[in-house]
Figure 1 (cartoon, helix red, strand yellow):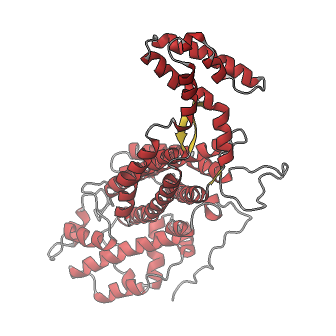
Figure 2: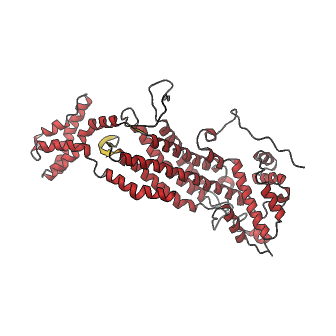
Figure 3: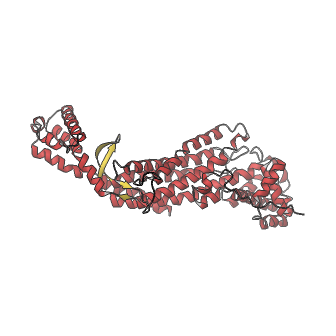
Length: 478
């Protein structure tokens, strides 16, 4: 007689819920990291092992059929209930599966240790998660590409040390962020195959138990592993202990850390560019969207702030993965278990959410041309100093002397500007005899006129980046 299975678990608002349960991350990513999906992955490992052992003649077709037919008859609630009795999650899962598939349950987990099932199930989750993130990363790059092309010639103030430096273009600035993400995609493509499953190797990775059960059959531990891992779509590590190499978890976190760093940099810059003092861009927003419950005028960069708030968790998650890999201890202890149950899923959900928000921002970004012009008019005269200095040196003035004169004039102009006066730098430079002794007043004025085009090869570099880097990797990723 089958045991009465408990009612489905429903977490209400009277108990703790992770913000990733309801607020951050896509439904498809949450599904991958759901407990139901995890235990279904475990069942897939058990079924594949049973099929391999059927080939050896030690499992019957009826037993395999029973396991397959009841693969989806899963009760995570019943597993939890049985775990309280048995004190072991896999023993509980075996018992729960055996209740609905009693014929197959007779041979379930034959020769295996818990991590033969758990490790491969988790690696399957990691690979499936990257398969979701990869097209989202490519889609984000496509959105960047459109903005780079559109704004490759839009001249704006470039900032170093948060001080007005010299002009750049908005497209060139976007290309910097996209270049980082192109590198991240290359890293993902290169490193993902290095994340390997445990295979089916028994308690300490030696496959000793399978040598015993396959004795006198046409099956070997190696053939069983090859069959099972091919069915699961996972490449096994050649050498393991009780678990998959925890280096794999560290590798996964490292990939996510790289992507997170790139998204964080972009989002931080958007916050600065959207600040009231600069106001050159804005995130897309709904009409009537509330920025503050107290200050009705606020238009906060909430998506960018959210991206940074989430991705700032990733260095800690990566360090936790480092600790797990470094402290696994001999063939394994359980100190590698509890922490990664939250850190790995949450890291994937963080990047999942951050990529969605980044694509939303860059696709719908609002560029304020008038604010850009205002900032160029305000700081543009200072940018002429580099042009004037080059002309003075070419005309024979000592470079350090030229630099010193222009520092002096710039300080006077800054002081005047802080007093609310128009920027007087052009007048100061054209009337300074030390300068006009080497270059004429007309040449000085010409230097100020050139400022609005003083972006070097930025537009051409945008085109080159799109042609040689971005578009090819997007095309190859389709």
